Amino acid sequence: VLLCSHHKFSASCKLNSVELGTMMSIRAVLGIFPFLLLSCLTSGASINGKKFVVTTILRSEPYLSLKSDHAGRTGNDKYEGYIMDLLDELASKLQCKFSIKMVADNKYGTYDPATGKWAGMIGEVVSGSADMAVADMSITAMREEAVDFTVPFMHLGITAMYKKSRSQRVPTSAEDLLNQNIRLGVYGYGSTFNFFKQSPIPTYQKIFEKMEGNADVLTTSNSEGIQKVIDSDGDFAYFLESPSAEYQVSKNCGITTVGGLLNTNGYGIALPQGSPYREAVNIALLQLREDGTLDKIKMKWWNKEKAICEDKNDWFQNVWNLVAAL
Image 1 (cartoon, rainbow, N blue to C red):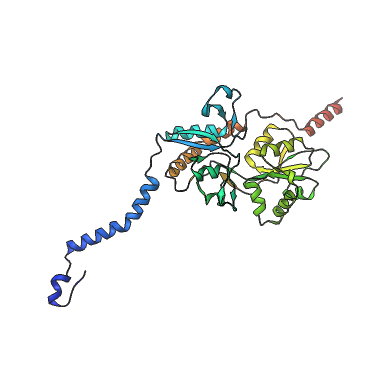
Image 2 (cartoon, rainbow, N blue to C red):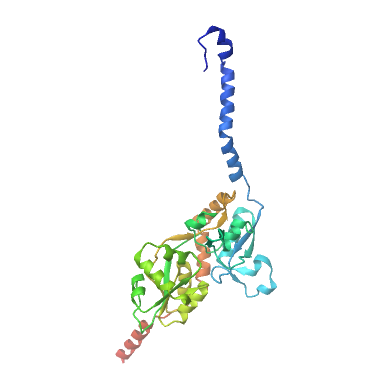
């Protein structure tokens, strides 16, 4: 409260309680106005009834592939896989629509320091040509600087896929892979490649040096790397994310994983920075996780056409038991 000690100034210096209250109210409103504006911009938008363009990548099963009769279909109906089921569940939960488009350059999201631009799905979200990216795309610190990721819809880690061979001892660790006469490969344009490139761990640094010195092991797709493992005779191992490795092991007898998980990460949906829809998508994903829907979708696609494998050692043991019984 402002008061004057001099009587002749008292009339002009005193503020009554009403004036003081009004002044404080105005100041309070002005003080919180920026925060009210930010709140309106970031959380006031409704997702109900909206239609979103989703950039993704044709990865084949289990993530996204063309239906066998895709030629006679249009739009989203041409595709099937985990990603399509996930989008269908989100559309139902959020009461919105998704229209998918294939990423133009067939890449996930890499940054080019020379141009200052992002390629792949991240680039399309940043440029505004897509509203979001939904794929088996890892959440990384660098990508998070360009977009806003949701909570993970799938958890994972990097592992090595390897074909067991009678002529070679099966490796059990990353160190074994280095010390044996085994070529090592990785997809050359993604987060797994960057994990080895940036790792401070000596073993992983040596793995990167071994791969970098052999250009033909840096593949242009995971499918290429997986096929190299299948066609090998125990002389090639391929690093990839664990969900893809699990799927391939379930379909191919003789294929195994080596060394457990080298790290932990997650797949998330990429939205533009400051997207007003991020909270709604996050809540929907958490609900789908809590009610078991995400696990149900994964089981559907990872267990499809699962191979029935017989352990050769068990087969020989059975034959031996039969001979011994005669």
